[in-house]
Every structure is written in structure tokens, then in C-alpha cells.
Length: 512
Figure 1 (cartoon, rainbow, N blue to C red):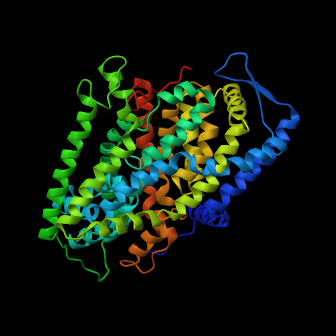
Figure 2 (figure 1 turned 180 degrees about the vertical axis):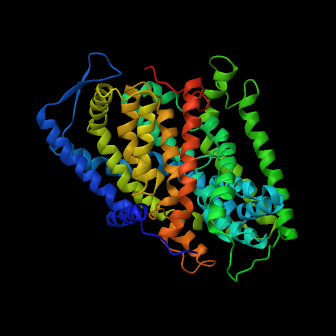
Figure 3 (figure 1 turned 90 degrees about the horizontal axis):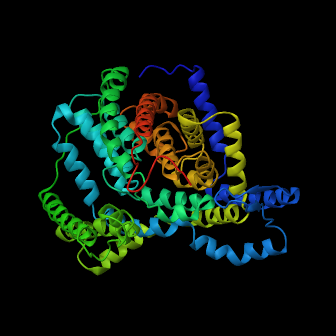
């Protein structure tokens, strides 16, 4: 590969890398933010600032001092509850019990390999990107499986292996918030959004569900697959040129036992899916609502409130079946060990949940989110920044923050209590704000060195180009960020103009 030119863009990326590396660990960052909230709550409360509650006419709200006697008592007595009550904690751990078993038995890896290897050569680029997008149902498994597999496939077909790696990475990471199914991302972000919406309107928050972006993310799969294929074949691959390395690859298909395991696992998932549908579809079904018409009885139902355990079971059962068929599970002890290993891998998230839980709770208890939401809405209204320019501005801000803070849940835990109330004040639903955030977060994942798996992707790439570095990797991935951002944002704008729901019972606008 030609020597990199250190122009303005490269210097800009170097600045991002240096700045990002100076930021503390997210765990430390949330602890610092919690401390800042405590200090600000005292300072602002002393000013006597008050605002009218947007959801309660005539009710005035002020910032509560969390460093006075009552506040200090709250800090110590609520600490455990703040940790346990951190919205994503339970839902993520419960979801990962199912997804983790499917991953550790080898089911997810086998399904991804089988799908990509079965796609005709003319459609291999699109198939690889589609598989990458769909891999988000398994959380981070796609990062480990698909980029090296994409490189192997392209090399075996005589194409540049780094183009295959880039296409897979784009699908897995830049398309992380698109899927045909609900994944762990939906409850993780959704619970934070619901909590943030409750700052303004508790009644509205109670009507929300974690499938709030489902219709949009399903449509996004097809858009990103097409755009990603075009960018790979028309931009990235020509730029990389002909591969001149010595590394060649041979494709290895699925073993017979893996094929058998997949067949049984898919059968089990199909039966599980039918069982889940019957719990809500039939009249008088146990998880069906009892108010309104048929649609309302499904949307506002115990079924929608039970999506987390349903998702967990729809992965747990096929994972268990696959493990038994392939002999990766021979007894209950194997299941227990694999579930324990899954929870052990979540250790960092659990510690993060403790400090993030304190920050979110302090921010809510102090009323700072409500006050900031009112003033922020007034500022944006005064600046006449509404409608499409407002959404575009929010996407740019969220994408910029993502260059420095890689974790989607960590960023949203910080941003949701601020931006969701502001956007609600300006007439946009929490569901809409979350979807705009997901677009910004996903599309910029692949160009930030601070993304958790970025170093892993570079390590995979160095197998084919020993000189591969951060700047080169970002330059390869940047076209995906640009075109994914443009196409996905245009799609969101069209969705807005048509007034289509983003998911079940999830409108574009908030009317209060």
C-alpha cells in the first residue's frame, strides 16, 4: 500500500486519537461526572433558579442540592439502589444469558459462516455486509468472526482481502443499529430512553417499549446492505488495488456435525418463535392486552413488556440444542460453566453500571435534567433550530462525541437525560431522538480508534498488510462512514416527512 499522506484529515484523526487517549476510562469518567453533578446541584440550587414543569402546568421546579444534609443522606442510602436500578443492568445481563450460550456453543459462528459461504459470488459482498449487520443480535460476536472471515473469502476469490475485511467490519460496526430482529442493543438503549422521557412525562414513558425503533431498523438493513456493497466495490476495493501479498486462503465449509446442529437449532428457534407469537396473537392469550382494538392489545401488552426474557429464550433454546447435537454440551454442568463464562465476560459492564447508575440517579434526583431541558429547548427555539436542521445537528453532535467515547450505552447514559427532554420540549418523541442517536453512534464506530474492537480489527488486517496502522485503517473505513451517514440520515428525514411510526406505538412527534 502506498505511503500515507499526512494531510489535514490525517492530522485531524491524529488529534482525535491523542485527545481520546487522554480521556479517563468510562468507569472513571462516570464517577467524575457523578461528582460534578453533586457540585453543580449545590451551586445551581443556591442561585434559586426555577422553571415551570413542562408536563404539569403551574408547577415550578428547582434544582435540588445534593450536598446538604438531606442530599448526603440520599447519596449513601441510595447507592445500592442506584446500582441495582440502573436501567440497562438487568436487561443486558438477562439477554446475554441467552445470547451468550448461543455464542459459546458455536451456534452463532457456524450460522454466520454458513450463510456467507452459501451466497453466490456475485452477491458475496452484499451477503457479507448483511451478515455483519445481522450479527448484532449476538452483541460483539460479529467483530471476532466476520472481519477475518470476510478477508479469507475475498482472498480465496482473488479479491483484495482487506476489502473483504472492511466490508464485514462496516456491516458489523457501522450497521450495528440495524437488524431484522431485536438485539441486546434495543433494551440497553431503550431503558435509558424511557427513563429520560420520564423526566418530562412519566405517563408517556409508561407507554413506551424497547421495540420503539423496530420498523426503522428493519428497513435500514436493506438500505445499508445496498449502500455498503456499492461503497466496497466502487470506492474501497479500487482504492486498495490488486492484492500483491503472498498470503492465500482456502475456504473451509461447515462440518457435517455443524450443519446438523444448525438444522436442529433453527427448528428449535422456529418452534420457540411460534410459541412466543401464540402468547400474544390469540384472543385471551396470557400476554395479550385487554384494552383497545387488536393492534393496541398487542402493542400495549404484557408481551411487549416481556421482550427481554423472550429474546433470551429464543437464543438460549437453540444454543442449548446446538450444543447438545455438536457435543459441546454433554451435561448440565457444561451449560452452567458456559453461562458463568458469559457473565464473567460482562464484568466490565457491571462495574460501569455501578458508576453510571450513580450519575444517572444523581442527575435525576437533582432535577438538573428537567431544568436543563427547559432552558435548552428555549435556546434552540430562540435560535430557530427546529425540524430537519435540529435532527441533523443532533446527529453531528452525537457522532462527534462517539469519536471520543466508544461505548454506545455509556454515551447514551450521559446524553439521554439531557437531549431526550430537550427534544421532547421541541416536539420530537424520545423514540425519534434515540433513533437519530443510533444512526450517529453506528456510522462513526468504524473511524474511532477508541472503539473497543478497533485494535482487534487492525490486528486482523496486519495479517495481510504488515504496515497497517490506525491512519490507514481509518482511511479505508472512512468512505463507509460518509455514505452510511448520508444514506441513513436521508432515510430518517423521509421517514419524518411521511410521519411513519418508528416502531410499535412509537411516533415521530411528541405532543405531550
